[in-house]
Image (cartoon, rainbow, N blue to C red; front, side, top):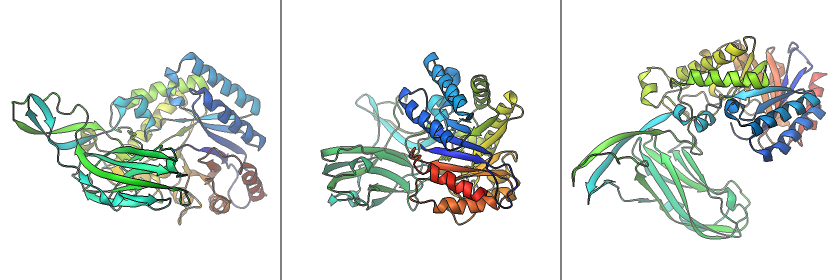
Length: 467
């Protein structure tokens, strides 16, 4: 899940007509391992309490609390004291399987196979047999400003690793820090990899490099752009190229004679979007990890409500073990959700368990083709436990109602709204949809930018809808 702050309201009364919102949470994303996060965390809690909230849905990396040193645990106690003073319950979010679990436990990460790597021994050294770099001429040029995407399509070999590079210079460019080099499967916006530039407004020629895995792809769209449409100044691009490369250390153990060549396949961690590696859903160590983590969270926070961070998983079903299982990615993820729920209920039998909706939602990510999934996610909504509370976070911004979809399947639901718009139009639409659903337990105030400025207005709207 990306950086955001959310206020969550649970609905306990029947949905027909106006309803009071008895349970109200604020979602705070900020790890207390970093002392610099504390002012933002405490401000979110105090602001929410002042506006009538009574719970903190906390995404603070608490899944790893078992390994935190004393100074980090002291900050947890500080968080607990603050919430107690403000009358706020703490509800932990656990196990971000999209990336964070594998970041701390790389052995649990998903793998893919880079195939057909050609090596030969020359002058006593084993080296990767390279093809000449392919120019990406469509990306080159001078005097670019904001708002226009430059794209170059290029054939690639399936299940290979590519290095994409270009040189860029800026002159008074107000959006230099927002420039990014990206790779996509041709015809898609499901990002394979991103390289932010981090350039100064005025800077001489600087190389930008991106590594991207062609997981089942036959062509890339390589794009260099900024989302700032009205940026001042300009930037120039030159020397844009793409070339196939070998993963680090691949081929180092090959025993070849001088002049001999061989072709090998290499298993490597899956890297998608910001070079993040998602969870492997068949790794045998998952159950033990979830069990130990749940025991630690229970010991430190003793929560009655737990929130699964099962969202924006960009790859799955790719490693040899996953493929050998004979299961679809939908089945693998659903199995893992059940494993997480079992770990929670082993320490808290009466727990209420929530989850983000997007990986289970046909209006969102549960679709035929999604990023680097080995098979479709369609039908996953029929495989996950029916006692989950599904938190829908695209309501009011999609043609179809996700809340209604899950309610028809028998789930209890929540709805997440706002998302930093200038107005609350989508919030009103989402609230209207939620109030038509008798099992919708909550309304969520969501900001990707830690911006609580709209919170009072949002709360007024909730009160209006409750009358």
